[in-house]
Amino acid sequence: MQHSIPNRLAFPFRRVALASVLTLASLASTATAQTFTIFGEVRPTPTGYHLADVDIPLTGKFDFQQFVGKVVEVRGTNQGTTKEPTIEVGSIQEAQDVLRADHEVRLGRELRMRIDSRTGQRWLFFLSPGRGFLPLDDLFPGVALKGTFFLDVATYYVFGPGALSGNHEERVPIPAAKELIGVRFWTQAATVLPDKTGVYTNAVSVMIRR
Image (cartoon, rainbow, N blue to C red; front, side, top):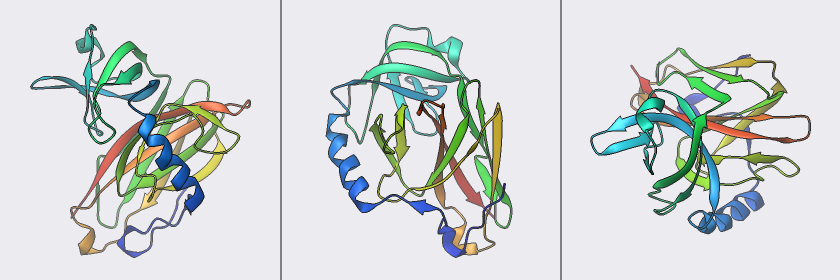
């Protein structure tokens, strides 16, 4: 399925209501005090390992090397802050729900986003020019999703839901506007089961090139 984007990357998708933004923001203060689920791709750094695209360090007594290049599901606690989180890992395993997207997209071309899921039956995609960090189970009323929302809650857009059977791909045309060169934004997805439970996936950062 294809979606249009008007000039200056103003995503034409449903925006979150202001009341919901305020509720989400008030919950952010609890992010350092709870055990939560977080999804991301493990990559090495000069000082250890982190979740790629969102640049969140991982600590703990695990052999993270065996997960390098893989998207994982982590249960852990935040030993940092909401602005600069550091996750102490309590458990780690390969994720069953994975978002794959182009890390770079050229002007006038299409951004491709694909969700692969072993169990999900509905999909949602999110886009935002800003990043955030919000462990949360109820972003949408009546839908209990585990995971961490990595996008800025004040600026994100969502499109969907749609039917999901194994995988689903969305394409978003990028305007051929020179002022967009060098703009970075983030995308994330969620998968939902019939009982209205599900997960937030890993996030992917996207840079617009000439």
